[in-house]
Length: 400
Image (cartoon, rainbow, N blue to C red; front, side, top):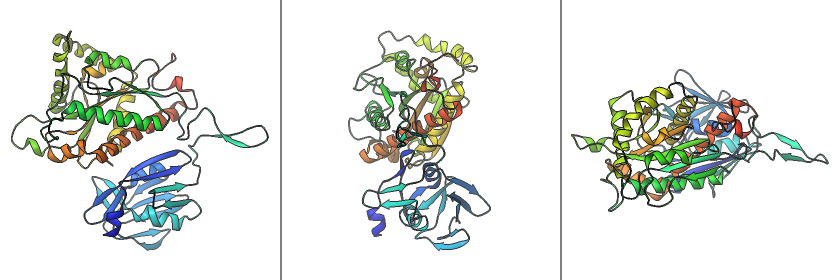
């Protein structure tokens, strides 16, 4: 009980790759737990699933967990756990004890845990970290072209807070009095901006105040210097039987909708055009041509991958179900002409999502997860294109 009361909401892993935030979930039975895939990514480890077990490999050591059993096998030797590892939505969750106690003890030379600050320090230097150069006189120094998190300098991301001004967005059925979608999206967008700037990524905001920006004017904020366009929204279900029970999060990229629900969400978001002074509803008909053209667009695959990463990272901070990566014809994404995604962070028509989306600490956790996913996307793209400069990144600032 004491461990649960003192458990942090986030554990920060410090490594040669920079800082990674791991959301901590309080399980009613197991107490504080965190997701194994997020930990594996932060530590540059590996995860293998077998019949009734899941094995994590770190520095040649094998940590085998048996979901439902409060033990693990370390290189074949059984160690007790304070609580059993468990599978939640196909994701292995580990008791906090593994990070705070077992790793620092079993890999004493590599890990140190600071309980007061909830920080795990990893002294190893994974192969994917920034290369070390030797300065004059033989003194090692970090590659000056890279940031501490491994990214090359110069990345820029555009963050779009959905709606604004007279366009209030989805009604805040389960938001505090007076709060609407436009307020929640702006709060999340500003927090994502702050997290990215801490990581050395430049951020352009489509709006920083409660103002209306035309749908077709938002994408162009992602200029030739931009690597990714991210639009943040809140979902809502139409009033019908059981509509308040629907909750969860989903991430979209621009393509023809494959389901009626995806098309419904796109129609809901595209309705914002009616608030624009020069809004032309007929312009929505042009989406058909744009969507056909996008089938050959080089950014389509990158948009889909960015959406996958955001969806994966959000799963660790969101208490609702992952509704998956989807595609639909969102007007706001058509003019970005860069990898572009739209996040539906939850349902304002659901009481649990309503509390999550408006709570200060949960907003910070959601924003940190989105920012971490963006960093992961940029790092992954850099690895795909090799050691080229940022100008060869997803923003395509040079001809290819």
